[in-house]
View 1 (cartoon, rainbow, N blue to C red):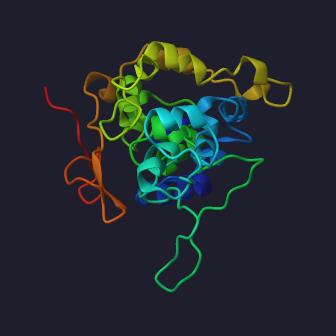
View 2: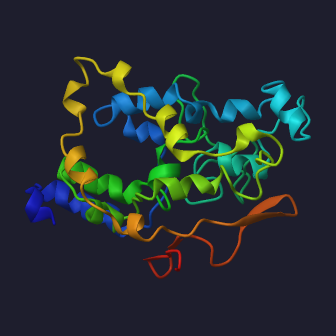
Length: 262
């Protein structure tokens, strides 16, 4: 794989080291800068780039009242809400709310910078990864964008976008169900148009970041498109979010992916 990309020895060693580690969430900020700046900037202005704000007291009052939530309550530490309003909550490297402590009492909560949205919003990895983007990000960097869908799927990238949206938008645990109001009916084709509105964010500084191989990859069909991955199921028990056994799309012990049957 590395010979194909003519990766220099030192960079090859670092990439191999990264790939040997368990996958984890690294945050949308890692996609910014020299790789996907227009996408990051567009994301910050999209609905996904402001999901954490909706959990604050007094925000989106009408919607909260509609589903019998207290509009004056702060939900920024509520497990049920954090699952779908942040990135990687209760998973390796994922968002940790205010008040999170280590066993020794050290503050482990995720740092929030209003100028650079990150794990506290619904970032890239919630839609593009199985268990975080640390591994396939290493492949992307080493290949300089010249990779196939199959090559990054091995390291946790997913392409079953219509399926992954059901993680939250149609999950039975969400209070915002179509039975409450027609506006909560989920149409993937309509919603995806609101996510990557990148046209307004290209500039001379990031013009070299255009995805040259994106059209080639569009002609490919990844395994996750042929057979979508299973969707995590969870429950809130004793005030904590617990994933139900056997419902995660990635088994970190066996290093295998779990696909839907039939």
